[in-house]
Length: 306
Ligand code: 13P
Image (tube, rainbow, N blue to C red):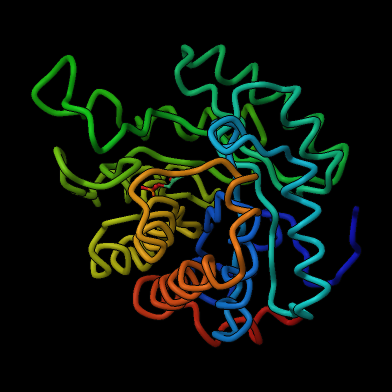
């Protein structure tokens, strides 16, 4: 159900205000609907702005729909009396139909990921999504360059710079698509860093920043040293404004439950309250740590002027 809560922001508004007050906002992936509650609770207690996200792949992995996820998010906003700035964001999505479902369910931001397509096609697909989403009052993030996975060896070359965002393409991509935020590939990857290590290419980030003023998004936040995150946020001339964090949350959740493998959302919902409680506490603690030491966005909610 849609809510008109004044603290429910589009990504465009969230990131514009974050930049105005000089902070970045964490985009956290609860993955399971019962995990939405401790993520929001951590933000409220730390007085931090926060984005809650789920991706097209995650809908499949956990067998949950956009409508189910959004319903729990809005119910938690109400029942916990959440007053910090929040955005409900659809992460990496390839299919327009999924984007339309999420917008109908009340998501205030969507990401179209056509980054595996040639530039022209990525521009055309992204532009179509922007037209639709903006007509519905919803923001759009898109990706230029490709963000890899941490557990994969590089397939073609000694390093993965061929996947990195080309600063020269960034300006054209943003100008021609009208996106509200740009996900860049500058050295972070998704998942736990086992094979590769996070090595943010700060020069490339600064070069992208010099080409376009659109808010930049850093994916693959799990496992990146906090000092590198702070440097990426506070780069001279402006750095990244949204940082995605998924793996660290799920690992904390499963470890606290003594589980090695992920489960379906329905299995998670069916856990007894005393069984799930340690996992929810672990997620709340992890999100609190990220807000305070990684993002340093604690106490910034009041500066958003809501
Ligand atoms: P991690 O799982 O590495 O935190 O990456 C999250 C992400 O970028 C999702 O888009």
